[in-house]
Image (cartoon, rainbow, N blue to C red; front, side, top):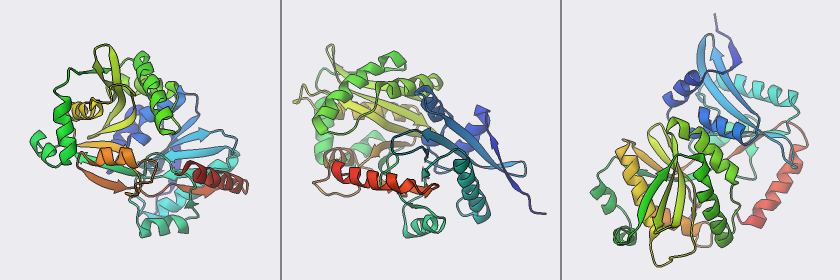
Length: 341
């Protein structure tokens, strides 16, 4: 007799983490502490488990977003299920539609850890999804295999990158770390400088503080920064999850342009991640193409210089729940053009 599916809220951290970390690929975007971060900043979350009989076969961290463009749900890095199991997928989609409709939600935006391909795009289209006007977290990422020796890593870098790393080590720079949420102001200050320089939308200091307060208590995150004297030149929040270190947030000073301090900081982060026994360093988002006119062309060139490879995830998918969703679609499409995203 076919076992029926059911949905239950998961309140046990160990149960949740054991499942998420058993999947491949895995993502901190569906981790327990990512949910805690969103609770910290005031978002409502749902941690739902999908069961077949008594067996947990899927999870989904759902983040409620209240915005002028309509109440909606975000599921970054998920849902985490076997997308080849069609009965489970059908049950999941039916449940999400009913769940969202009962809560007055306009749409659900998902971005599961599925590689982008014509097959995955067709699958989601057949399930009733449409391509979202905006991205959801980093969809094109740059990854280094740091299980290699340091000499091997350096040999695979762009010649200029290798030179600047070695040059940076000759300056009297200090590398420091902190897991104190109060130190998140260091990054907040530097990101404001970076936003002013490059014209992108930054994150609030509360987000930085929340990530360190939640991931940090489990030794899953820290603030990494480099200093010259008393001046902090660059700072980053690095998240450690599974076998990967994630370069999640960063900011840098407009001063000391003659010093390649960003290369110094990246190399020290790589050294730290290697000492922790991690296998990968995910440098997070890059531009989708090598178009030199793309607004993220500079940071993309910087990251690619360290060697590594590109991983492109399926673009964010929207599941419309209410006809009002199309107001959001028009608004976000226009904003995407304005921001050159």
